[in-house]
Image 1 (cartoon, rainbow, N blue to C red):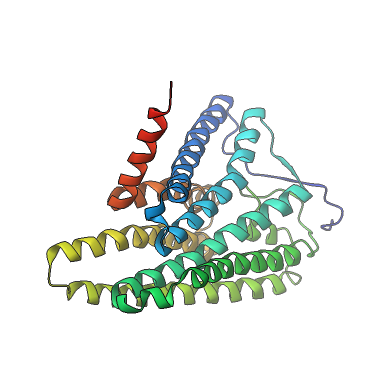
Image 2: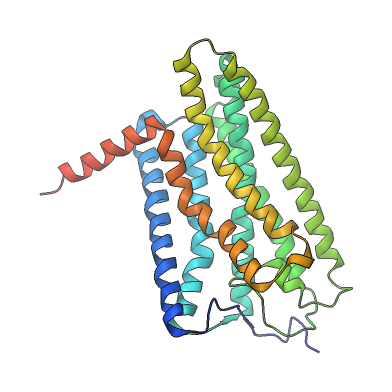
Length: 311
């Protein structure tokens, strides 16, 4: 028997024990990580530097890119390091920090995606009230509320999870520190508080998801009433990327946390966790830039400006 205070380190799940495959995992994750850094970094720089993009929609997109950068940086470099040096260990303090930061960032991202759906709803369904409902102060407050809500949620979960007595060793069936895997190590009767917090978080997440769906139903109805084809195309071009990002993020998180224990296995958990923790931050910039003409034009101007200044 051991408890959380006596455990000094956790052992993470390795992708493979074969050295060649470990190096392949390192290079694969390095490529994904660099793509995420480049894509999100370009979005942040473009929005920050182009005055035409200083609007609520792009302000929220900048915040989303920051969250994506943070979330992928929390887990991928550590996983790459473990594969490169053939180790599985992470200190208990490092595990707590990783759990807190990742939970903070992905929870804030869900709340921010909800705010972004409200932004698109007001822009398309109530355009005359857009400047009133989404002024600069209101946008800052909504973004700050998303970040603060994520911080509070992560703090509660992390403090509660690491206060539980751990009775079943220190090996986690995951490549990063994740609440469900830590709960598997705890005494069954001691994890009820955390299960209650998870239930509350699931309810809040479901409420956000319902709000997003209702917003997009209203948006779709409004777009279909636009008489001109060009107007409908412009409306869809600003909404479809956001809807795609929401679908990718919410579906993978729901699969990860709500799948039946009967179908759970280390390999399946590993694949699902990669889908919701690594893939979205890397592909979100691509999704947003594919159909957004304003962003593509601003990005092209930024790149041209950079190369024109080179000697």
